[in-house]
Length: 395
Image 1 (cartoon, one colour):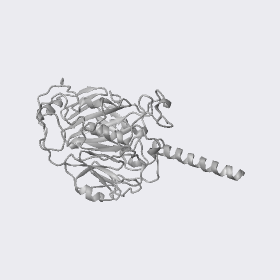
Image 2 (cartoon, rainbow, N blue to C red):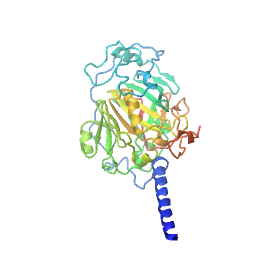
Image 3 (cartoon, one colour):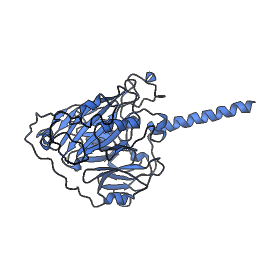
Image 4 (cartoon, helix red, strand yellow):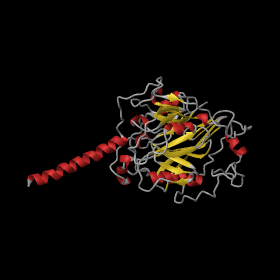
Protein backbone atom coordinates (compact mmCIF):
# COMPACT_ATOMS: atom_id res chain seq x y z
CA UNK A 1 0.00 0.00 0.00
CA UNK A 2 2.85 2.34 0.88
CA UNK A 3 4.52 1.73 -2.51
CA UNK A 4 1.26 2.47 -4.34
CA UNK A 5 1.09 5.81 -2.53
CA UNK A 6 4.73 6.82 -2.88
CA UNK A 7 5.19 6.00 -6.56
CA UNK A 8 2.49 8.45 -7.84
CA UNK A 9 3.88 11.15 -5.54
CA UNK A 10 7.41 10.64 -6.90
CA UNK A 11 6.19 10.87 -10.48
CA UNK A 12 4.15 13.98 -9.69
CA UNK A 13 7.15 15.69 -8.07
CA UNK A 14 9.34 14.72 -11.01
CA UNK A 15 6.83 16.15 -13.46
CA UNK A 16 6.54 19.39 -11.51
CA UNK A 17 10.31 19.71 -11.34
CA UNK A 18 10.61 19.18 -15.08
CA UNK A 19 8.01 21.85 -15.90
CA UNK A 20 9.66 24.28 -13.47
CA UNK A 21 13.09 23.66 -14.94
CA UNK A 22 11.75 24.04 -18.48
CA UNK A 23 10.21 27.39 -17.59
CA UNK A 24 13.38 28.62 -15.91
CA UNK A 25 15.47 27.35 -18.78
CA UNK A 26 13.33 29.24 -21.27
CA UNK A 27 12.87 32.56 -19.51
CA UNK A 28 15.37 32.99 -16.69
CA UNK A 29 18.53 30.93 -16.87
CA UNK A 30 21.25 32.38 -19.06
CA UNK A 31 22.73 29.44 -20.92
CA UNK A 32 26.50 29.15 -21.12
CA UNK A 33 28.54 26.53 -22.90
CA UNK A 34 32.22 25.86 -23.27
CA UNK A 35 32.01 26.38 -27.01
CA UNK A 36 33.02 29.76 -28.43
CA UNK A 37 33.87 31.20 -31.82
CA UNK A 38 37.12 32.91 -32.69
CA UNK A 39 36.13 36.11 -34.47
CA UNK A 40 39.45 36.11 -36.30
CA UNK A 41 39.26 32.44 -37.28
CA UNK A 42 38.08 32.00 -40.86
CA UNK A 43 36.97 28.47 -40.04
CA UNK A 44 34.59 29.75 -37.37
CA UNK A 45 33.24 32.90 -38.99
CA UNK A 46 33.65 33.75 -42.63
CA UNK A 47 32.80 36.73 -44.80
CA UNK A 48 31.27 36.36 -48.22
CA UNK A 49 30.98 38.75 -51.13
CA UNK A 50 28.34 41.32 -50.17
CA UNK A 51 27.14 44.65 -51.44
CA UNK A 52 23.95 46.57 -50.84
CA UNK A 53 21.51 46.44 -53.71
CA UNK A 54 20.56 49.64 -55.44
CA UNK A 55 17.23 50.88 -54.12
CA UNK A 56 15.24 53.92 -55.09
CA UNK A 57 16.70 56.63 -52.93
CA UNK A 58 14.62 58.88 -50.72
CA UNK A 59 14.99 62.42 -52.01
CA UNK A 60 16.66 65.06 -49.92
CA UNK A 61 14.44 67.72 -48.42
CA UNK A 62 14.76 71.22 -47.06
CA UNK A 63 13.17 70.21 -43.79
CA UNK A 64 14.46 71.94 -40.70
CA UNK A 65 15.46 70.56 -37.33
CA UNK A 66 12.13 71.74 -36.01
CA UNK A 67 10.27 69.16 -38.09
CA UNK A 68 9.07 66.50 -35.67
CA UNK A 69 6.51 64.77 -37.84
CA UNK A 70 4.52 62.13 -36.01
CA UNK A 71 4.77 58.43 -36.78
CA UNK A 72 3.62 57.30 -40.21
CA UNK A 73 2.24 54.16 -38.61
CA UNK A 74 -1.51 54.31 -38.26
CA UNK A 75 -2.13 55.30 -34.65
CA UNK A 76 -5.72 54.11 -34.79
CA UNK A 77 -4.39 50.57 -34.52
CA UNK A 78 -3.45 51.31 -30.91
CA UNK A 79 -7.07 51.34 -29.86
CA UNK A 80 -8.59 48.43 -31.73
CA UNK A 81 -6.85 45.18 -32.70
CA UNK A 82 -9.92 43.05 -33.31
CA UNK A 83 -9.77 42.90 -37.10
CA UNK A 84 -6.80 42.21 -39.35
CA UNK A 85 -8.33 44.29 -42.14
CA UNK A 86 -9.51 47.24 -40.09
CA UNK A 87 -6.58 49.46 -41.10
CA UNK A 88 -6.25 48.51 -44.76
CA UNK A 89 -8.21 51.53 -45.92
CA UNK A 90 -7.17 53.90 -43.18
CA UNK A 91 -4.30 56.36 -43.18
CA UNK A 92 -2.54 58.83 -40.93
CA UNK A 93 -2.28 62.54 -41.61
CA UNK A 94 -2.47 62.38 -45.41
CA UNK A 95 -5.15 59.95 -46.50
CA UNK A 96 -5.61 61.61 -49.88
CA UNK A 97 -1.93 61.54 -50.79
CA UNK A 98 -0.75 59.48 -53.71
CA UNK A 99 1.09 56.39 -52.42
CA UNK A 100 4.83 56.21 -52.88
CA UNK A 101 4.76 52.74 -54.42
CA UNK A 102 2.09 51.98 -57.02
CA UNK A 103 1.01 48.45 -57.93
CA UNK A 104 2.99 47.17 -54.98
CA UNK A 105 2.16 44.74 -52.18
CA UNK A 106 3.67 47.16 -49.68
CA UNK A 107 1.58 49.55 -47.60
CA UNK A 108 2.29 53.26 -47.80
CA UNK A 109 0.16 56.28 -47.02
CA UNK A 110 2.75 59.03 -47.54
CA UNK A 111 4.13 60.53 -50.72
CA UNK A 112 7.85 60.60 -51.45
CA UNK A 113 7.96 64.25 -50.46
CA UNK A 114 6.19 63.56 -47.16
CA UNK A 115 8.58 60.72 -46.37
CA UNK A 116 11.57 62.91 -47.17
CA UNK A 117 10.18 65.56 -44.80
CA UNK A 118 10.37 63.10 -41.91
CA UNK A 119 14.17 63.33 -41.98
CA UNK A 120 15.73 66.41 -40.40
CA UNK A 121 18.96 68.32 -41.09
CA UNK A 122 19.85 68.32 -37.41
CA UNK A 123 19.26 65.70 -34.75
CA UNK A 124 15.78 65.93 -33.25
CA UNK A 125 15.36 63.85 -30.12
CA UNK A 126 12.58 63.23 -27.61
CA UNK A 127 13.29 60.69 -24.84
CA UNK A 128 11.53 57.33 -25.34
CA UNK A 129 9.55 58.73 -28.28
CA UNK A 130 11.39 60.21 -31.23
CA UNK A 131 14.66 60.54 -33.09
CA UNK A 132 15.46 61.93 -36.53
CA UNK A 133 18.50 63.11 -38.45
CA UNK A 134 19.37 63.41 -42.17
CA UNK A 135 19.39 59.61 -42.64
CA UNK A 136 17.34 58.00 -39.87
CA UNK A 137 13.77 58.52 -38.69
CA UNK A 138 12.39 56.78 -35.59
CA UNK A 139 9.03 57.42 -33.98
CA UNK A 140 7.76 55.28 -31.09
CA UNK A 141 4.07 54.91 -30.34
CA UNK A 142 2.46 53.09 -27.43
CA UNK A 143 -0.48 50.83 -28.13
CA UNK A 144 -2.67 48.59 -26.04
CA UNK A 145 -3.84 45.26 -27.36
CA UNK A 146 -7.56 44.81 -26.70
CA UNK A 147 -7.25 46.76 -23.43
CA UNK A 148 -5.07 43.95 -22.15
CA UNK A 149 -1.33 44.59 -22.62
CA UNK A 150 0.80 47.58 -23.58
CA UNK A 151 3.18 47.37 -26.51
CA UNK A 152 5.63 49.80 -28.08
CA UNK A 153 6.05 50.10 -31.86
CA UNK A 154 8.99 51.95 -33.37
CA UNK A 155 8.26 53.23 -36.87
CA UNK A 156 11.67 53.29 -38.57
CA UNK A 157 12.74 54.72 -41.91
CA UNK A 158 16.34 54.71 -43.10
CA UNK A 159 18.02 55.96 -46.27
CA UNK A 160 20.21 52.85 -46.57
CA UNK A 161 19.99 49.28 -45.32
CA UNK A 162 23.51 49.71 -43.92
CA UNK A 163 21.93 51.50 -40.96
CA UNK A 164 20.10 48.31 -39.91
CA UNK A 165 22.75 46.40 -38.01
CA UNK A 166 23.29 43.63 -35.47
CA UNK A 167 25.54 43.81 -32.43
CA UNK A 168 27.07 41.00 -30.40
CA UNK A 169 27.82 40.90 -26.70
CA UNK A 170 31.38 42.14 -26.27
CA UNK A 171 31.64 42.08 -30.09
CA UNK A 172 32.56 38.42 -29.90
CA UNK A 173 30.67 35.58 -31.59
CA UNK A 174 30.09 32.63 -29.31
CA UNK A 175 27.98 30.99 -26.65
CA UNK A 176 29.68 32.38 -23.55
CA UNK A 177 28.97 36.07 -23.98
CA UNK A 178 26.02 38.08 -22.68
CA UNK A 179 25.58 41.81 -22.24
CA UNK A 180 22.77 44.32 -21.76
CA UNK A 181 21.01 45.54 -24.88
CA UNK A 182 21.63 49.16 -23.89
CA UNK A 183 25.36 48.57 -23.35
CA UNK A 184 25.82 46.94 -26.76
CA UNK A 185 23.83 49.74 -28.38
CA UNK A 186 25.81 52.48 -26.66
CA UNK A 187 29.14 50.93 -27.59
CA UNK A 188 28.16 50.96 -31.25
CA UNK A 189 26.66 54.45 -31.03
CA UNK A 190 23.30 53.01 -31.92
CA UNK A 191 20.10 55.01 -32.00
CA UNK A 192 17.44 52.42 -31.24
CA UNK A 193 17.89 48.76 -30.33
CA UNK A 194 15.94 45.65 -29.47
CA UNK A 195 17.29 42.33 -28.30
CA UNK A 196 18.02 39.73 -30.98
CA UNK A 197 17.45 36.01 -31.34
CA UNK A 198 19.59 34.81 -28.41
CA UNK A 199 21.69 32.79 -30.85
CA UNK A 200 24.31 32.45 -28.10
CA UNK A 201 22.06 30.17 -26.06
CA UNK A 202 21.74 27.72 -28.94
CA UNK A 203 24.33 25.40 -30.43
CA UNK A 204 22.69 25.22 -33.84
CA UNK A 205 20.71 27.41 -36.19
CA UNK A 206 21.77 29.66 -39.05
CA UNK A 207 23.44 32.93 -38.06
CA UNK A 208 24.57 35.78 -40.31
CA UNK A 209 25.40 39.12 -38.76
CA UNK A 210 26.26 42.21 -40.80
CA UNK A 211 27.13 40.10 -43.82
CA UNK A 212 29.25 37.62 -41.88
CA UNK A 213 28.48 33.92 -41.54
CA UNK A 214 28.86 32.99 -37.90
CA UNK A 215 27.13 29.61 -37.81
CA UNK A 216 25.84 27.40 -40.61
CA UNK A 217 24.55 24.35 -38.73
CA UNK A 218 20.83 23.59 -38.90
CA UNK A 219 18.70 23.66 -35.76
CA UNK A 220 16.18 20.94 -36.44
CA UNK A 221 15.13 20.52 -32.82
CA UNK A 222 12.74 23.45 -33.22
CA UNK A 223 9.19 22.51 -34.08
CA UNK A 224 9.36 25.00 -36.97
CA UNK A 225 12.90 25.78 -38.08
CA UNK A 226 11.87 29.16 -39.49
CA UNK A 227 14.56 31.79 -39.92
CA UNK A 228 14.43 35.43 -40.99
CA UNK A 229 16.70 36.70 -43.75
CA UNK A 230 17.19 40.42 -44.31
CA UNK A 231 18.50 40.92 -47.84
CA UNK A 232 20.66 43.56 -49.47
CA UNK A 233 17.64 44.98 -51.32
CA UNK A 234 15.97 45.78 -47.99
CA UNK A 235 13.41 42.98 -48.10
CA UNK A 236 12.65 40.34 -45.47
CA UNK A 237 12.04 36.64 -46.10
CA UNK A 238 11.01 33.86 -43.75
CA UNK A 239 12.43 30.50 -44.78
CA UNK A 240 12.81 27.01 -43.34
CA UNK A 241 16.28 25.61 -42.65
CA UNK A 242 15.12 22.28 -44.05
CA UNK A 243 14.70 23.89 -47.47
CA UNK A 244 17.96 25.83 -47.89
CA UNK A 245 21.61 25.72 -46.97
CA UNK A 246 22.97 28.90 -45.42
CA UNK A 247 25.26 29.30 -48.42
CA UNK A 248 22.20 29.46 -50.66
CA UNK A 249 20.64 32.16 -48.49
CA UNK A 250 23.94 34.05 -48.38
CA UNK A 251 24.17 33.89 -52.17
CA UNK A 252 20.81 35.67 -52.36
CA UNK A 253 22.39 38.64 -50.57
CA UNK A 254 21.56 38.04 -46.90
CA UNK A 255 22.77 40.87 -44.67
CA UNK A 256 21.29 39.33 -41.50
CA UNK A 257 19.86 35.91 -40.68
CA UNK A 258 18.08 35.30 -37.36
CA UNK A 259 17.23 31.88 -36.00
CA UNK A 260 14.45 32.02 -33.41
CA UNK A 261 10.92 32.43 -34.70
CA UNK A 262 8.41 31.45 -35.56
CA UNK A 263 7.48 33.63 -38.48
CA UNK A 264 4.48 35.86 -37.83
CA UNK A 265 3.63 37.35 -41.22
CA UNK A 266 4.89 36.33 -44.66
CA UNK A 267 4.04 38.07 -47.94
CA UNK A 268 1.33 40.08 -46.23
CA UNK A 269 -0.43 37.09 -44.65
CA UNK A 270 -0.43 36.13 -40.99
CA UNK A 271 1.18 32.67 -40.71
CA UNK A 272 1.47 32.24 -36.95
CA UNK A 273 -1.21 29.89 -35.65
CA UNK A 274 -3.40 30.11 -32.56
CA UNK A 275 -1.79 28.26 -29.68
CA UNK A 276 1.64 28.30 -31.33
CA UNK A 277 4.48 29.01 -28.94
CA UNK A 278 8.26 28.72 -28.65
CA UNK A 279 9.31 25.43 -27.06
CA UNK A 280 8.57 25.36 -23.35
CA UNK A 281 7.04 28.84 -23.57
CA UNK A 282 3.74 27.04 -24.08
CA UNK A 283 3.76 26.61 -20.31
CA UNK A 284 3.56 30.41 -20.04
CA UNK A 285 1.35 31.50 -22.92
CA UNK A 286 1.33 35.23 -22.12
CA UNK A 287 4.65 36.99 -21.87
CA UNK A 288 6.80 39.92 -22.90
CA UNK A 289 7.41 39.77 -26.63
CA UNK A 290 9.85 41.17 -29.16
CA UNK A 291 9.35 41.25 -32.93
CA UNK A 292 10.76 42.86 -36.04
CA UNK A 293 8.84 43.62 -39.22
CA UNK A 294 9.15 45.10 -42.70
CA UNK A 295 6.42 47.37 -44.01
CA UNK A 296 8.40 47.99 -47.20
CA UNK A 297 12.12 48.13 -48.07
CA UNK A 298 13.81 50.71 -45.81
CA UNK A 299 10.62 51.01 -43.73
CA UNK A 300 10.66 48.79 -40.65
CA UNK A 301 9.05 48.16 -37.29
CA UNK A 302 10.62 47.19 -33.97
CA UNK A 303 7.99 46.04 -31.47
CA UNK A 304 8.17 44.96 -27.84
CA UNK A 305 5.34 44.29 -25.40
CA UNK A 306 5.16 44.39 -21.64
CA UNK A 307 4.29 41.33 -19.59
CA UNK A 308 4.39 39.66 -16.16
CA UNK A 309 2.67 42.64 -14.52
CA UNK A 310 -0.98 43.10 -13.59
CA UNK A 311 -1.45 46.08 -15.91
CA UNK A 312 0.03 44.11 -18.83
CA UNK A 313 0.10 40.32 -18.43
CA UNK A 314 1.69 39.82 -21.83
CA UNK A 315 0.80 38.58 -25.31
CA UNK A 316 0.61 35.23 -27.07
CA UNK A 317 2.47 34.79 -30.35
CA UNK A 318 -0.83 34.86 -32.22
CA UNK A 319 -1.62 38.22 -30.63
CA UNK A 320 1.82 39.52 -31.59
CA UNK A 321 1.00 38.49 -35.14
CA UNK A 322 -2.21 40.51 -34.97
CA UNK A 323 -0.31 43.56 -33.68
CA UNK A 324 2.25 43.36 -36.49
CA UNK A 325 -0.53 42.86 -39.01
CA UNK A 326 -2.28 45.98 -37.77
CA UNK A 327 0.96 47.89 -38.29
CA UNK A 328 0.88 46.91 -41.98
CA UNK A 329 3.88 44.60 -41.88
CA UNK A 330 4.44 42.68 -45.11
CA UNK A 331 6.79 40.35 -43.22
CA UNK A 332 7.25 39.96 -39.46
CA UNK A 333 9.27 37.66 -37.23
CA UNK A 334 9.33 36.76 -33.55
CA UNK A 335 12.57 37.39 -31.66
CA UNK A 336 13.56 36.36 -28.12
CA UNK A 337 10.91 37.39 -25.61
CA UNK A 338 10.33 36.93 -21.90
CA UNK A 339 12.76 38.78 -19.69
CA UNK A 340 14.99 39.45 -22.69
CA UNK A 341 12.44 41.69 -24.42
CA UNK A 342 13.99 45.17 -24.47
CA UNK A 343 13.63 48.35 -26.50
CA UNK A 344 16.23 51.03 -25.96
CA UNK A 345 16.28 54.52 -27.50
CA UNK A 346 19.49 56.49 -27.27
CA UNK A 347 19.88 60.18 -27.95
CA UNK A 348 22.08 59.28 -30.89
CA UNK A 349 25.36 60.18 -29.22
CA UNK A 350 26.14 56.62 -28.15
CA UNK A 351 27.17 58.04 -24.79
CA UNK A 352 26.24 55.72 -21.92
CA UNK A 353 25.74 58.83 -19.78
CA UNK A 354 23.49 60.45 -22.34
CA UNK A 355 19.72 60.62 -22.54
CA UNK A 356 19.13 57.03 -23.62
CA UNK A 357 16.47 55.06 -21.81
CA UNK A 358 14.61 51.75 -21.80
CA UNK A 359 11.23 52.22 -23.48
CA UNK A 360 9.34 49.17 -22.23
CA UNK A 361 8.78 47.71 -18.75
CA UNK A 362 11.60 45.17 -18.41
CA UNK A 363 11.08 42.71 -15.59
CA UNK A 364 12.42 39.28 -14.69
CA UNK A 365 9.58 38.61 -12.25
CA UNK A 366 8.41 34.99 -12.36
CA UNK A 367 4.69 34.39 -12.58
CA UNK A 368 2.75 31.21 -12.06
CA UNK A 369 0.09 31.45 -14.73
CA UNK A 370 -1.96 33.71 -16.96
CA UNK A 371 -4.34 35.03 -14.30
CA UNK A 372 -3.55 38.72 -14.27
CA UNK A 373 -5.14 39.12 -10.85
CA UNK A 374 -2.26 37.12 -9.35
CA UNK A 375 0.46 39.13 -11.09
CA UNK A 376 2.48 41.77 -9.23
CA UNK A 377 1.64 45.43 -9.60
CA UNK A 378 5.16 46.75 -10.15
CA UNK A 379 8.02 44.26 -9.94
CA UNK A 380 11.61 45.54 -10.21
CA UNK A 381 12.72 46.76 -13.63
CA UNK A 382 15.98 45.44 -14.97
CA UNK A 383 17.50 44.41 -18.27
CA UNK A 384 18.44 40.82 -18.88
CA UNK A 385 21.80 40.30 -20.55
CA UNK A 386 21.58 38.85 -24.06
CA UNK A 387 23.95 37.54 -26.69
CA UNK A 388 22.94 39.91 -29.49
CA UNK A 389 20.82 42.88 -30.52
CA UNK A 390 19.28 44.42 -33.63
CA UNK A 391 19.81 48.16 -33.87
CA UNK A 392 19.70 51.21 -36.08
CA UNK A 393 23.10 52.84 -36.08
CA UNK A 394 25.05 55.53 -37.83
CA UNK A 395 26.70 54.55 -41.09
